[in-house]
Every structure is written in C-alpha cells, then in structure tokens.
Length: 171
Image 1 (cartoon, rainbow, N blue to C red):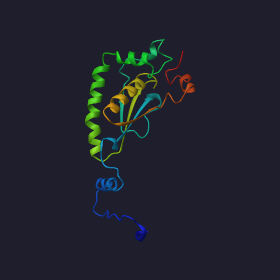
Image 2: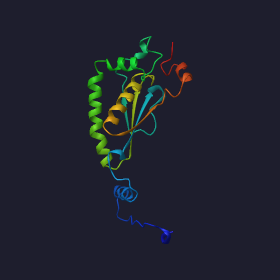
Image 3: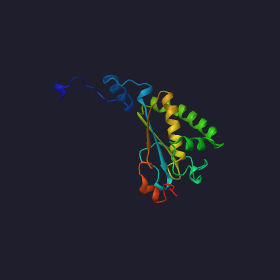
Image 4: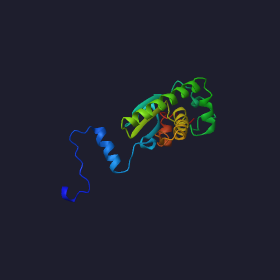
C-alpha cells in the first residue's frame, strides 16, 4: 500500500489537532467559518434529552402556548405561536444572552478543531416553545454565516405521540 500511496503522512509526534489540520490542508478543508456545522434540536423533556448533543438549554420558564386553546393545535413554526413565545417578558433578554453565548462559544469550538456542535432546546411537549426558539435561532446563526441544521424530534413523532399526552396533547 505504501508504494501505491499518493501521499505519505508521518503522524508520530502529531496531536489530534495537528493531524486534523494537516488532513484539512491535504484534502481542501481549510479552517473557516463553514467548517463547524451546528445542529439545533427541539425536544420534550418527558422523552429525555436527545443523544449526541453538546449542550442543552431548558426553555420551560417561558409562557406555554399549550394553555391557550387557539394555539394548542399549532406548533412553534406557526407565526401565532412564535409571536406568543416572543411576547413573554423573559424572552428578549434570554434570547439576547443565548445568542451572545453562542457567538462567543462557536468560534472557540471551531478554533479547537470541532467540526460539529449540537444544541438541544427543550420544553414540556417539544411542540411550541422549543420549536419556536430553534427556528428563530437557526435564522440568526445562518445570518451570522454558520451552517445550521434543524431537527424537531417530537414534531416528527406525529399524532400518536401527541395523543399519548406526553407531547402536550391536542384537546
């Protein structure tokens, strides 16, 4: 194999970060703003925290749209729900601090050589508050130039999960 190789890389004495940087140089994956992928995930606490995330933020302190009859069947992707969540007096200062924290942390994680950062935002049913925040945060981070993906774990579970009562239920 060695005789057929195009590139030989001596790794003795290299740290994992040195090796990653050298591989990036060799294969055209230079460090840059797009080199850190951010995965945002909404979830419900009754189902537990998602696997494979690096940080969890609990947003159950915000007012719950579940208790508003007209908003209950909607989810955080609907404008009415997002507006309701954003109208909570605690929302703006919380969101500002969350964005400031991420704007500090993400470049540091990228500089450390991480290629992936997972953030979970959780609420009681995983349908309203956490979903609205993930949607808004994804837009903010994308506007900052980050590569962002979204997953709404408990919206994906469908009507069976909602009917069980764990997802906030539809009355």
